Length: 493
Image (cartoon, rainbow, N blue to C red):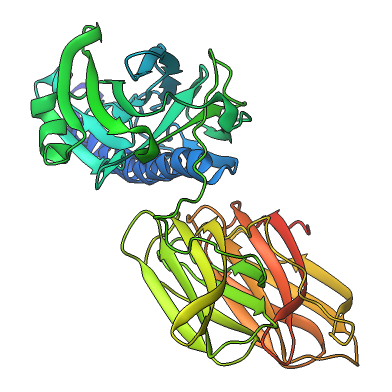
């Protein structure tokens, strides 16, 4: 037999080579077409997540300044691609969150001038497939800035700097920079200063640094406002303009907030507004005792205040109201008892300041009145009175258990023992998301003793919650309470 003429294996070799070639071609096509598409989808999902994080950060800056309450926000700077067995991923796309250089806000009345250092915030992604367009925060405006790529800006959250002739300026301070793919926690603290270090009085001219010029944004946003006087291009630096406003100091509210610490750049100034005669609920007397429990569902934009009061004077009716000082949100209820409680739901106004007022009316005239100013942010005002009496029920023992889990389920369990004697109608249990990035819920019971009482709002793990137990007497008045702030992470407060 002559093996040199035996060619029976050639077709197998040729077939193997062809199959191997098709495999290499398929892997190449997968690498250059499918992998980028799948990675682009991962990046787009992260873009939507970080956009929501930045919306939450903007709200935190404004809330910290206007409500004088520290805020803690989390930003996922970057993302990672799925592991691949036969393909290669580019490096994980990180991101950078940072503040800009400081530029001075100037407020002057002709004889006195003050300056307050201010910074912008920008987030820049490091995507491999999608555009690396930065997102910027600029004087309450949150927007995508595509101008460096020859595109326009895209506004995500509109301005709240000027509204109906009133200027509300929250000045951001302190240097900050974080980069990577991990989550970064941003701590936002309000100023510690007081009204004694306020702004000039009378008619004031205000110049505010901004990266948005007149035609790009401000003409369309506040051009019809009487306080708007224009934008001076490149006043501070190339691309950093001067937004100019003219307003009365009584209609100007200025607060400073700092990232990762109290504001510490230059003279920290805050204009703390005291109630005036023009405000809803101006107080002629202080003979009414009252308490406000904030039960706001922030994510649903549903402010709710449970108002308890006690008044022993002569009256025909008691009017209880909650009126926003920032918008048209308002609700009023009339009651016939001198000691009672009522739930007020204005319908909208999350984060806004409300004047909560109890008025005693006789013969059509206000004979006594009390107002507490508070923000719809789940936090109770410090001016609350103790409305308990010697015959009121009280909490003798209680526990609060955080049963939240890794499936993004916020779950709390309560146990409480209320005294067997004393006026009692119900216990109200609330689990309220403080920042609006999670669900909230409340439940009540008429039992004086409960065990394993469940309140399960839903999603929102690893975010801060106000967890409270309110004891309500037979008149509807809150007479005892237990309130804690807890991160819903499965660890008991």
